[in-house]
Structure formats: structure tokens, C-alpha cells
Figure 1: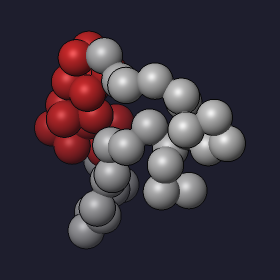
Figure 2: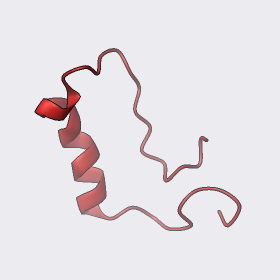
Figure 3: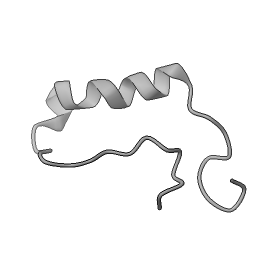
Amino acid sequence: MAERGWGRIGTPEEIAAVVALPCSDAAGDVNGVALPVDGGMSL
């Protein structure tokens, strides 16, 4: 994990923020997207 990604596991608060995003006003222009929560490993 040193070459890519955060190099650590996400906190519950970070995961919760991603889960809540589609329900928020900030996602007004987001549709039909898969949002991986993998610490940047899929970049």
C-alpha cells in the first residue's frame, strides 16, 4: 500500500461521509456512478 493509496484503513467517519454523499445537496449533479471506497487503491 505504500506505492498507492492512503497506506491506512479509512476511519468510520470517512466511510460514513462517502455513504452520506449521495443523499446530500452536494451530489446534485452526480448520477449513475460507482464510488469505490478503497483508499485510492483502484487509481
